[in-house]
Amino acid sequence: MIIAMKSGATADDIQGVMDRIEQSGMRPLNLPGGDRTVIGVASSIPPDLREPLTELMLSLPGVDHVTQVSRAFKLTSREFHAADSIVTVKGIPIGGKEVIVMAGPCAIESSEQLMDAAKAVKSAGARILRGGAYKPRSSPYAFQGLGLDGLKLLRDIGGEMGLATVTEVMDQHDVESVMEHADILQIGARNMQNFPLLVAVGKTNHPIVLKRGPAATIDDWLLSAEYILNGGNPNVILCERGVHPLDRTYTRNTLDLSAVPVVKEISHLPVIVDPSHATGHAKYVAPMAKAAVAAGADGLLIEVHPEPKEALCDGPQSMRPEQFTELMESIRSIARAVGRT
Ligand code: PEP
Ligand code: MN
Image 1 (cartoon, rainbow, N blue to C red):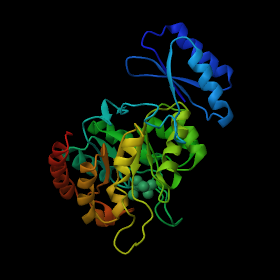
Image 2: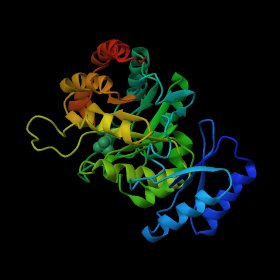
Image 3: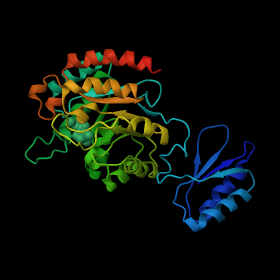
Image 4: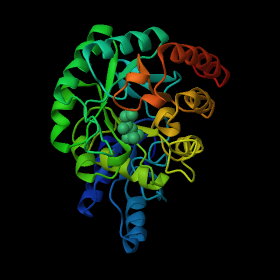
């Protein structure tokens, strides 16, 4: 439920509405933006309470009108927050006019490898360096990442190169330490419904990239985002990375590009696309990255490795630096063609 106040409503009127919502056992939220105050009810309202609560709200001084939020997700919904949300990371706005590219290796392997990747992606125009330190691998025998040593490399090299950084956090107990080392926390596809992890990152104010689970519906994905927003952290960036495919012969996943305009319509959160995990093959990354920008994505998350053949994780889908540079050039013209920069 959203209660729109009249433009002349006083601070007392607003407080009065907030108090009555609390007295009814629900949580009021004062929503920013616009020329007048809007108050949301951030709780699900029992069906039999909807009518009487609406009547009560309409009887209070300063209230203009009351709207029901039709969707299961509330804070994530555009009904709650009409304007696009912009998540700012070290002065970089994600969700605004500029298409932001995050790039780097799947896994941090060594100081030299990360530095080479950082130089390459920076000179091509990426603003954020990606690199995994805790890797969710299907096999327990596969390279699991460098852990804390990897995080330190990311912090040092990101700092030295003047790049913001993003890395995955897999365990709720690692949230503090990952936050100390990286500017954005990534919740991986496999953890999209790890609710204790969502609750833990919701208690921080750190920007979060929330990947879509491989078998998650759009509503499930937005409900996971809702956990983070409901915890008090509004800085969520959604990432489409492909869903479980009908056919794995040619691609690793199926990039659901229609999710971009759908989510931009029903939610105010920024949406980025990861064409690397979506396709699983470096040669298909460029066409899907370009399509993503044309479809309205606010950014891209791309795997780049100085020597993909030597990569300890996701080599086949990692672009070589020169391929990435070429891609960034075409992305610039596509961004311009769709009114972005
Ligand atoms: C990754 O970004 O390296 C990763 C593991 O991605 P996803 O969670 O989308 O599989
Ligand atoms: Mn990867």
